[in-house]
Image (cartoon, rainbow, N blue to C red; front, side, top):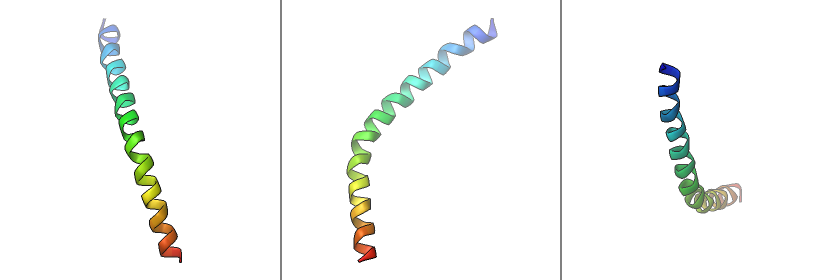
Length: 44
């Protein structure tokens, strides 16, 4: 009984993380480009 009750919350957490990752992915792409640009400037 405990296992069956504990599984749904885990699935919800995974779906929430997936949504957060999707949102972060859109923002992170810009951040990664800016970060790479900063590294390039520092190396130069």
